[in-house]
Image 1 (cartoon, rainbow, N blue to C red):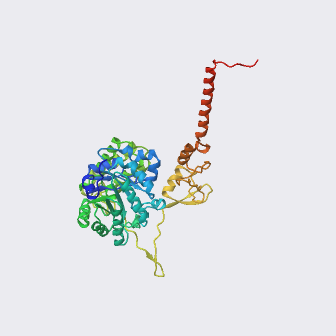
Image 2: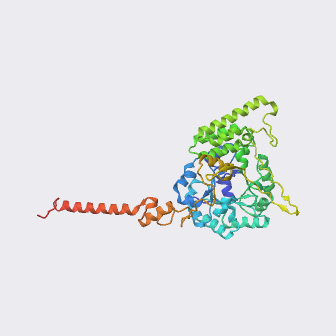
Image 3: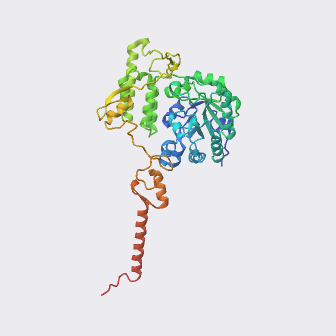
Length: 475
């Protein structure tokens, strides 16, 4: 068994001293995008965040998200998991360790789905649990354990948090310089000061994440914080050539990405569509008809054609517009050039008549639609589209069916399952106990009894043959 490298030795040798890093992005850092990013300067990539529990129990999930994406060009590679159970996390790591160079524990996801699932940044106050998870994984698996975290408001608490993870066995730490509340419209500026404090307090490599839109930002961040590498997420999605210091025309990146997708199938269509929306973001604000078309097409050929139409329109604009072609207020380059998307600053709170601040309420875009009873119902634009496709779809939360959870995994259970489990858990239990579950179409007991009956019949037949091959019938 090869010796497991640790800390700086792991970073220098296994990760080849990587400085330019593509972040783990749900449904976005898939194989094709990683390969495109590597062609344009990225030195290390992460898989999308994978759910440890699903990875352990579902062979198809493992194949679709890791095993089926093995590619010699896609190294070094770190696989990221979200988890909240030490044993499950270790099981997932053991199943993944032969397909990557390290395993990363996601402690930074701030989204609502992470809060409901109790993972990501919503574990950052449970130090005892995290220490156990990292320590156990470090002891049991053959590749190093790394962690990606967000900072606390207090710098001292952030430093202690990082030191705890290092002591537990974390061999590389990525620090996103934002708190768990800095997301969406309130994303704000990442604190490089927190990252610097962590870098000075630990004896393992540190990657910085946050405020990276251009290569100059990467260089400035490394100089100010002293980190070993810089990770980019949003910046990379809008410009995969960021680490080369280039801002190419969008169609060049789009066409190269689509070429990679065709070379390394299968790639989920929704991933490809999402990447094209990111790449063409600024142009689609102008050519809104093609935005609608990009959302509708059903196959890779259709997505490729929409991207081609966008290129033709941009090139026509260049031909006819002269020096001012493509200039949009607020953008440093013409809209067809790869460049970052800057989130609009949230509006300041409004003071009421008493002088106290009133938090601005963000209203969804809504139009009135007539439901089946004739009453008007305010629906968001997205729900209106779903309503148009399926007029009978129910959007009322009170009328939606309440699903009872499976007793073992938390997924919805079968309504008439004899074990009160989902199909996957029911199948395992029925197989183990040789039982039937009519609601899930499982007939292990029936098949076993049939096989037993057939064996008995075969035994009787063999016995008759040994007695002379015939039966004596009474007169």
